[in-house]
Length: 134
Image (tube, rainbow, N blue to C red):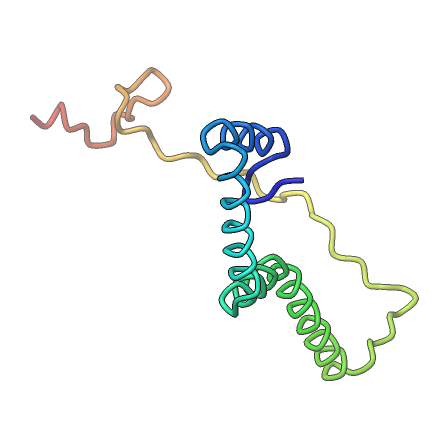
């Protein structure tokens, strides 16, 4: 159990240090003063508002998820109501057309203009050659 981030072993250590510093008589007075101060804080309106706000912040994600789920349910019902009953599916659905083999040969790729011509790609004698015209 922790109170204000102080565990039981730490609280015992604080009491021992206070007993050594204040002594037994002043320790009673300090205890009464601290007790009154804590009671005033806990019974104040500010503390109650702090506790309520803290509780709301802890439950905020859960509340937001519930509200979002309710809205999604409403939208789902509206969509289902607007679309009407689902159409009946035929017993023999139409099968999509299958791909057909190519009947014509693929077209040749254009000549590579970057690479130097090879034996296979040299221009024929009847075609204009830019090197011969130069």
